[in-house]
Length: 119
Image (tube, rainbow, N blue to C red; front, side, top):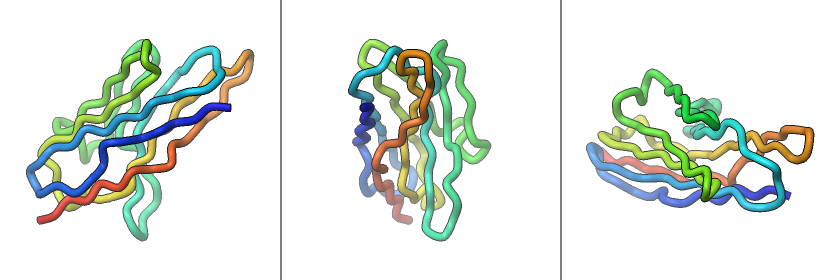
């Protein structure tokens, strides 16, 4: 079984910063892609940023230049540094990891962490 535990969400004023962390634990062979998604009330879940095992990254247009995704493979952890936050960034942020267990790969999700940006 694989678990993803997120941390770092909270309430911040517009223009502020937050850093999210997501640590994977359990029995697995390796972690391929890791990513952050978010879901605002009444909206569909959307990709925020993704990072591959060799650290190639891609971002949603709305966060380019403000958010940075990174990972520490030794700690099986992915981070999301969020700067210049706006109220439009308010959402529940979810971590996702594509995990290889023996010969199969499976996507796992974290429980989500709330990010609220006040104006």
